[in-house]
Length: 90
Image (tube, rainbow, N blue to C red; front, side, top):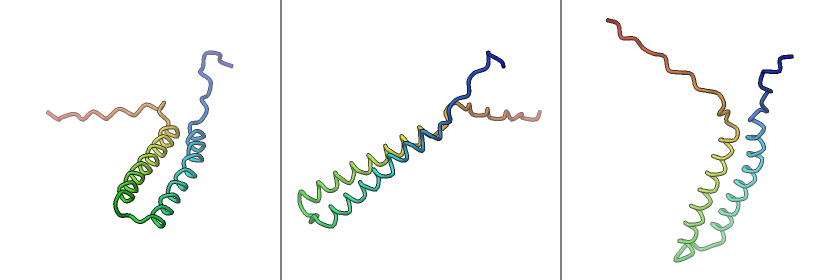
């Protein structure tokens, strides 16, 4: 056994799966709440303006949750391959 090698790293996909397990129900509940509000509330006056704010806030929260999930599941330790150098023939 070589004592100088680095230990194997835990896989990152598990973090992404766990994060998706949190984000999927959150997304579903946000969409359900927006549909209930859209169905029950008249969208005129201040209620309509409040609905637009709630819609933008929900879209931002859903986007942030899925972005967080994507970043946790992505393997950032792998270095990208260098771009091949093109030689100009002379």
